[in-house]
Image (cartoon, rainbow, N blue to C red; front, side):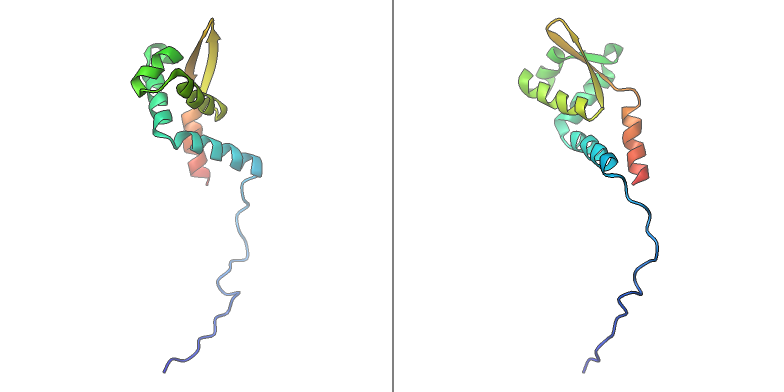
Length: 113
């Protein structure tokens, strides 16, 4: 025979919780990690960071990932919007570079969660 157990519902709750992230900051961090959540985008970042001069033309990014220029442009837009890369238009070509401190900011975001 089992005896009924009474649980004090308030005993498990702490009286104070740490403040949550402001909504805008949570959205920024989510965009950052969403951008990093795709293997193609991680590969693109790796290629840009190891490229001569620390930048790469969109024309040099398509063949290594085996995707069309339009698809790579879409990936690069997401990386740009997340603040991970910068984009510079030179004639008809777009050049991308890692944004200053972007990867450090990703690490900081993880430490702050």
